Image (tube, rainbow, N blue to C red):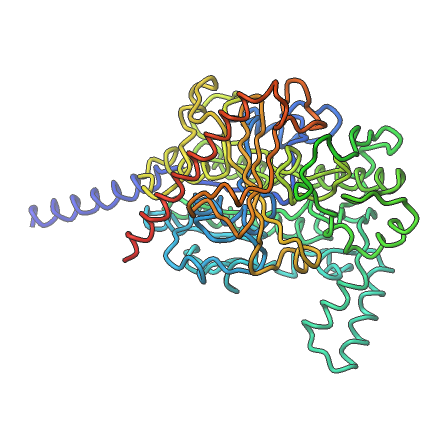
Length: 544
């Protein structure tokens, strides 16, 4: 009997020890923000009000020189969440599904499930156009959360098109939907019709935060966190916030944080000297909003980009800033919930923006380029036991996957193309790489083939950004870095010296004074292409 009792006690001890070991792994709160460029207090901006993101910065490391791999939602998220660059994920557009072209690719949450984590998500984490209806079902240990209608303000109900609460806008959208249904359209087709015909760029009315989807999602996320805190397994919880993505919609109190007369426009709104034409686009995303045709018609247009009147520029900037402050408040609610649940001390918190955003510079709006304003993106990581600091060391979105594995104490998958930033968090002067790599495709036809839904882009631009320069090479003939380099496919190249020219006013790639610099960085680019070819071959061999 004594032996039996001792054996039972031993089993209980072992089980409790295993549970304790599992729970000892840090939780991960993974905050994805759409179209957020690094104009935050933590990045030295004194105009934009972001006290909560700044609070997170004081808890961890702010990566001042962080860059995305492709400045558009779907490809950059696919790259970040797999730790693989776009030419390996084969996601360059907003319609190709990841599992259709890379069925064996492993995502960050999918991998963490194998390491003892439960994984949950809500909001825009993957771009929904690049995954299945379950938001990549294999990535989540519980079904991906959809916005529960009960979290919206009851008297207002759901926002029209998932975006608008202004009464007049909702009535106009409802009218279009009813007319479309009467014509025999499906509900999905009717909703698309409303989006095409009723789509203002901004809205700022006096409503609570949860009048809009982001606010409702955060209320739901807080309840999910409360449920997760009661479980004995570590969690990976991904929370996607859609603002400040267009339309620039936020409750009035966030608009009131800024005076429009104090807003300063982009100082350089011209094409640069010695331009490469394919480096530019015509801001098709912004053009698609229904209040823009009138603005465009009354504003003299240049041969590149999108010229917007001063009044409309200020309205758009005002809306973007308000949406950032709205997002910041929602981040604060998540941080408060972590604190109240006692989770902060054992939770890694990462906040990232999927890419930057043009706000009139180069006469460009939106993202969709290899320029600095589109490729540079915020990244903040807080982890238990790591001091607060800021680093100028280069980092990329592909580094997030291996970094989180390293911080969580789990093995880093060998196929990842990024590097762990853990050493940088320990010492902000440490460098794990000398430069970042970004890329962007151009199709050259039919307005980026109906807003980036093209099957193939004939032209691809690859960009290296180091501490002083950005070098970009534009390639035709459907070149990808996983293919052998052919000099005859080069359209042109760009070089910008940020010490002398922070606004990218002059392309000095053909300037004799910069010949040695251009030669050196181009050689680095060709060496990068060579590594991509090797990686592609290795990946094919692995799947045989």
